[in-house]
Image 1 (tube, rainbow, N blue to C red):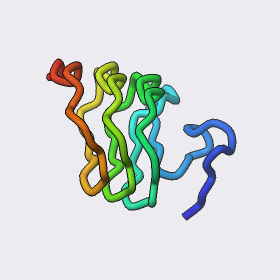
Image 2 (image 1 turned 135 degrees about the vertical axis):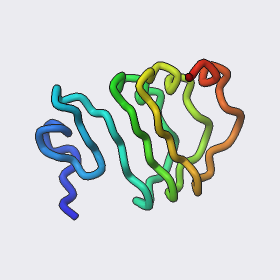
Image 3 (image 1 turned 90 degrees about the vertical axis):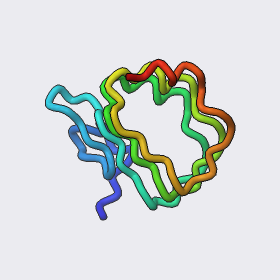
Length: 96
């Protein structure tokens, strides 16, 4: 794997596990089994074009941030085999 995180733009520098659309917007985060630790930050809501979030089989903890509800294109989310806790935010019930 070529680990190139934090080197410039995630789209033009082809960051591992990050996919972008033709306009240079992050639209997929695919990082299963990467030993990721911590919580999903509220800044996830700053990725309005995100359509896929695959973070399964990591060490993600805490609750799901309300900001996930801002992601109107999010069609696929996979967080199994983590330690996410709490209830699903009510705002996520507005997804269709």
